[in-house]
Amino acid sequence: MRKQDYLLVFRGALKKQALRLFGNILFIQAGAILAAFALERFLVPNRILDGGVVGIAIIVSYLGALPLAVLVFAFNLPFMALSLKLIGKRFLLLALYAVASFSVWVALFEPSGLITNDLFLATVFGGILLGAGVGLIIRNGACLDGSEIISIILTSRVPFSVGEIVMGFNVVIFSVAGLVFGLDRALYSVAAYLIAYKAIDLVVEGIDESKALFIVSDKSQEISNFLFERLKAGITIFKGMGGYSKADRDIIYVIVRRLEISKIKNAVRGIDEDAFITIHNVHEVIGKNVRKGAQ
Image (cartoon, helix red, strand yellow):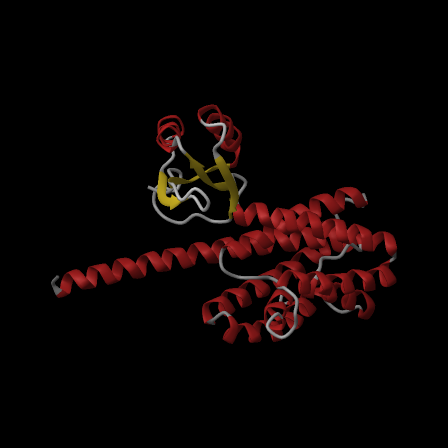
């Protein structure tokens, strides 16, 4: 390959990276706007908290009459600094950008007032919008709350998972919220947190969730034909051996949409009632011909 060709390939790669980074920045900004809007127009005016560092900032802001936007940024800084060694420079820069943008939009939305004082509506729609915003930020390589970073650090030193540490952290925050804002507000805060958590999953993993199936059958060829011809799904066949019978067996591996699971199970049972099927969640699929699965 000539030098000019190498330069063209290099420039093309840089252009793709620049476009990808620009897309990340754009979506992180959109996520920060959504999250700040949810916080200042639905949750905070009704004294409903988020979890994590943002929840601490809300409590301190209420007790000390300090600007929430400043506290969110200040409280997150130490955790963001810890992420440099843990996750890397790119993550740190994007996370700082996300937190700074979020803080700015919190300050801008703060004087606008609440949209509704109905606690149920505020909890549901505030939780959905907050989760959608945070999900956009996470999906584009950043985070909005330092509690998960400190949880990752602690998990190597204590016998608890990241999820368990985050949950314990939030239990303390919501307990304090019960003392400061009242038990009903603490319960609404827990509900908003759970709604936001589910909304984050939907944004990060997608509504059209994929499933991975392993199918073991003596009629693997007929099943493979059905998957390919009827569903246009790509398949991979592994060679296996029965643990008891020692007989050679084909193991079919296929990735399909969640809505197609029932059709596949019924079809496989119709072809081979003794077929063995396991179904697993797939959080992300990367590569060409994703819809067609493995080839």
